Length: 337
Image 1 (cartoon, one colour):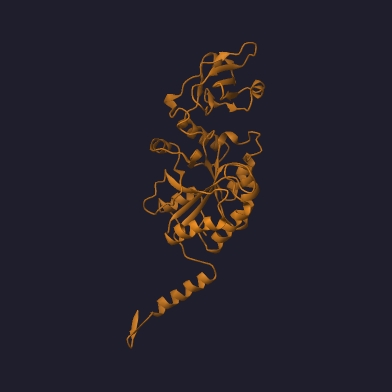
Image 2 (cartoon, helix red, strand yellow; image 1 turned 120 degrees about the vertical axis):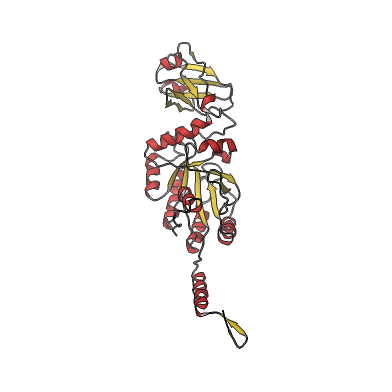
């Protein structure tokens, strides 16, 4: 800064920078070091139908947390494998949201705690077997390394080898094994939370997806599970309703703001302004269904459009979780606009 006749004036370089910054602001462009990630939990079909076209229109990408057991399960509420490949080809990240969407307090925690079911043949209905189960929820069953598919009724199980039905009211599970000898030898085990993380990644990897991120079901997480997750994933996103600060981010406990149905676009944009722009933070949003009533706390597609429009006009970097960790934690590269 120069001084002429007692008046402080900006140097030519500083003046030029100020003019350029003002011009960028006038055009809606700002220079940011913070960034935003959009994460859609559960893998609902409405994300492919409504969110994907909206974000594509603005050249933005997102991360989808997939419940591996729901892919191509025949349930139209969830995306199919071909939908997920299309998202990945467009730059979206496919993440694991567990195998069956359970919490570690509702099922055995570790593989070492998995117990073989005490299966007994169902009289007159070979090859069906049944057993009592002590936990309130059954994450899944595994027969000699192969995951059995959960079905909505006992009738469906009777017609499909490699399936089971869990009656929560009476705490009883009905099993149609791939091989009856497995049941007779008590070789079918109830899946633990450790297996939830491991098997979900494996199933998605077998479908050709490069999975490095885990999205916690129900936004429920513990230090014990965070430590365990390091065996299978490079990063984990949870809840917390706060943002991630540079230099103090735990890649195995990334914080997210949950977006609720009644949240306005203005309110969500306000979080971006406050925490990504003003505080230079990494803001991650937890969303579910879009544009329909599917899933928990669905959000309107028009609101998503308003958010996307703001992010694009203000040049806020929007990244997947995997890319975000590489930039934010590892210091590799810069976010693209």
